[in-house]
Every structure is written in structure tokens, then in C-alpha cells.
Amino acid sequence: MSSEYRCHFDNLLILDFEGTCEKDDHDYPSEIIQFSVCVLNTRDKIIREDVSFNKYVRPVINPKLTDFCAELTGIDQDTIDNARTFPEVYNQFCAWLKEHDFQEKRFAIVCDSRQDMWRLAQYQFLLNKQPFPTIFRQWVNLSLYYRQDLRMAQQQDAVHQSLIERMSAFYNIPNEGQAHNAMDDCSFLAKVTKRILDNGTFVNINESLKCIAGSRNVPFNVDPGWKSNFASSCKVLEAILPLVSFRMRDYNYEVNYGKCHYCFSPECTGLEHKQYPNYVYEQLKEPSVFAVTAGLMKE
Ligand SMILES: [Zn+2]
Image (cartoon, rainbow, N blue to C red; front, side, top):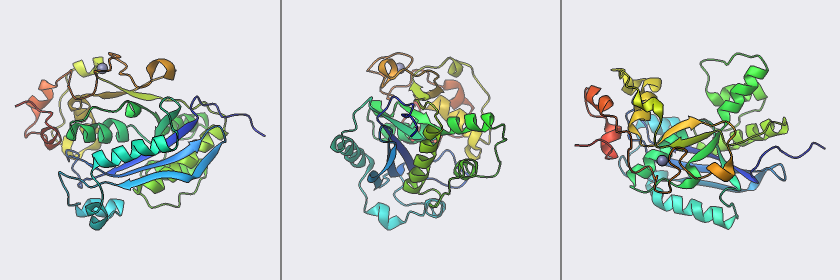
């Protein structure tokens, strides 16, 4: 029998969102349309087949899915027409946490990148003019563990494949799900998380959000083609969004959990931009739809 998992948290909640989107447009005001969570109990060392959260969400700004989005996610219009809006689904999620006794600081959220929390969730709460919840302020970015394992195995990362395909090949874990279905992605990522723990790796929160970053004080030239270039768009959105994500080593959940790493203030809700990026907005040839829709750009 192997020893206990090396993890502070009783449960890891593997979470994935799908959002509205349009082909070649990273300035799209993405709203969450699928909200899925799988549970890995780290004490019993099992993926809970009996407990999960999977809800579709009705978008409000763009209630009609683009053909590109419907094709990518496999979600049809009828499904989201009949779904609840995000604030209602988020309340259902909080009730689900309570129902299963998942207590704050005793669970951590696991995602396959920073995009779910930093971009999609942060933007959704801005659209709803609601404070950003403390449970989403920090997470385990699984791709950092994958990259660490690749380095240890002295392997190069494959190109032209999705992260899930690459993880599937590297860990030899078949991915039976449909790509870009949030629940299927969670099921797969739960298996990867379990494998990483089975290998004896210490799994901890490794990314968090803060309101001020020194790097954001350094002006940069905006790529004129940023809207259609993923990396360039991330650079612009890092400046535009009030909370910025960063990597954390030696995360101490007793001290850091639920707090802004910069100001530690409970008032730091993400609703106020403390490093308003004038220089970015000045360079844009046309206003950012993403920023304008969420009221991020001053008149
Ligand atoms: Zn702060």
C-alpha cells in the first residue's frame, strides 16, 4: 500500500468552464456557458463517481451561440436557452459545496490553466457587477505539474496538439471524452491529478490573483493584430482586467487563502482597477469590445 497523498486539502475540485466565443476573436466578451466540477478525495484517494457538478449557463450579452462556439463545444442552443443565468448557477454551486460539506480552505480548485479563473470567471463576475469570490482567488494549475513532469522525464512538449492530448500521451491516460465538453475535460483532468498524486508529488495551490503587479507598470506596445492572436490578447487582457494572475511557490493556505496577495484586504473584490491601463487603451485602433462590455473602459 502506498502512503498518504501529499496534499493539504481533503478534496480537490477539478473545475472547467466553457464560454461563448467567436473564431479568431479574442476580444469577444466571453460568458460562461458550462460549469463543471469533478471531485478527487485525497484522503480516500478516489475520484468521486457519485458527486459532481455540471450545469449549463444561459448567456445574456450574446444569448445566441456563434456557429463556431456551438461546433467547438458541442453545446446546442436549446440547452442554453433552457439554462439559468450565471448568478443563479453560481448560487447552485455554493449550495452544492454546502450540501457535500466542502469547506473553504479544506478544498482547492484545480484547472488546466489560468484561463478559467483569471479570465473567464473574473470577467463573468465583472459582467454581473459582483465581487470576485474568495474561493476562486487561487487554484492549482495542473499544466505546471505536467511541465515539471516533462522536464523530469527530459521530454519535449509536443506541438500542434491540445494540452489534454499531450497529457493523455505523456501519462498514458486515455481521453474518452468529447473535446471542449467541460464535464468530460474535468473527468480526464481528475485522472491526471490522481496520477500526479499517485506518483508521490506534493500538490498545492500554485497560482493566485492580486490587484497590483510591478510588471503592469511597464508599458508595452500593443500588437495591432492582438484580437486574433492568443498570446497578444493575453497581454492586453492582463492589463485590462483588474486582477492579475501570478505563480506562487510555497503557497501557504493558512496565510494566503482567499486573500489578495498584494493588499491582503477583504475590500479587494476585483471591481476596481488599481492600475488603469491608459497607455493600452490609447494604443487601440478601436475600443476593446471586451473592455467596453464590462464597463472597464472609462469614458
Ligand atoms: Zn488587492
